[in-house]
Length: 73
Image (cartoon, rainbow, N blue to C red; front, side, top):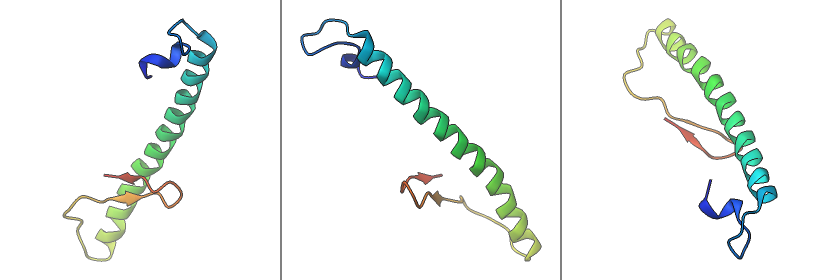
């Protein structure tokens, strides 16, 4: 959390803004953990598929979320 998110423009504590910012980050972290779980399940399936087709994955698999554009390495 940025240092100034729990304070108002004059530098005084603003618990409402700080709480709102923490809730936003909490939701973002929850979504990111869900995406990581999906990827954690997907990679072994991709490796098994390659193995069944007579191939071996020899490098890093990089995935890109079509919706957000974020890359997972």
